[in-house]
Image (cartoon, rainbow, N blue to C red; front, side):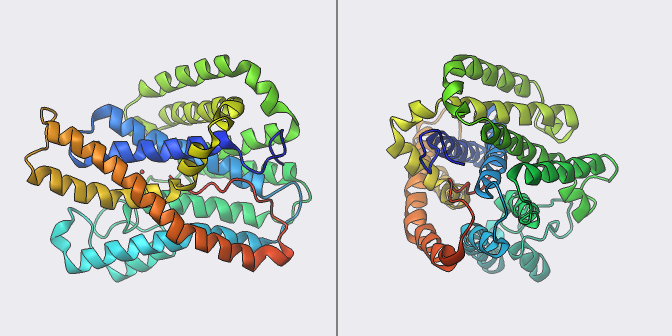
Length: 367
């Protein structure tokens, strides 16, 4: 499937994943300085939820409307996600091993490190914190799991059949989540409400695929869809961060994220008019997501050294602004020097027999 105009890129999705990554950056910039509060917590968590909806949408779209080569699919997804994540994980591992005092809870443990590298969920030694060595990688464990599910249905003769089977499997896992003890093991990690936004993305993709021209017709309802998205966000804000782990709160969060994605799709022509900036922001979103914590960590060390740290300090807000700008610069370099060469390499490996559609690459994503 392509957009109504036949383009191979959806600018609204590019814009949204870039903005979602930026929301995570802003949230962490405030949280790292213990200035977070409810707005920052919500921005970061909501950014991740939007990422998951986008991944459900785009990977379902990229799998196409028929059978595809699972090997090519796996190669492209692996080279898209793993190398940069491995680089950041090795960096954190090296720092945790050589300078353990730099971290509050992160510790180097060989088994924990290896499982982090291979996307195997494992709690931080001595805790029930089921995040990998590089903490942002918890979202990638879900991303990889979703890729595996999609790849397992490579044999489906239609996209609709694949989407239906995906929904059956994920619905079963959601049902199972109510029968397992939270944070009790790998089964509990994947039988989790965090699958809900992926399911929403699958549904949105299939609806647009079954209704050719729907993106154009949605433009007429953009104001209504934007109002609905705003209402859904306000609803989600009535829950606390902890309540998002329970069904009512997560339903609200996933509904809001899905509503935002639908509203963005209705504004495809609007985003297309300034496509350059949105393409850039979407392209660097994965590097922005993974690399910004290093910038934020260094930035706050400088801010505190200059006497900043509180809401009453100009240094604090100038520093946060500088962190955000620096994160965008570092992400652009990461994309140009790391992601682009790998994408070309993946294309060379799969081009001779590639049957998977080459729609917008979702990155991750993912706080």
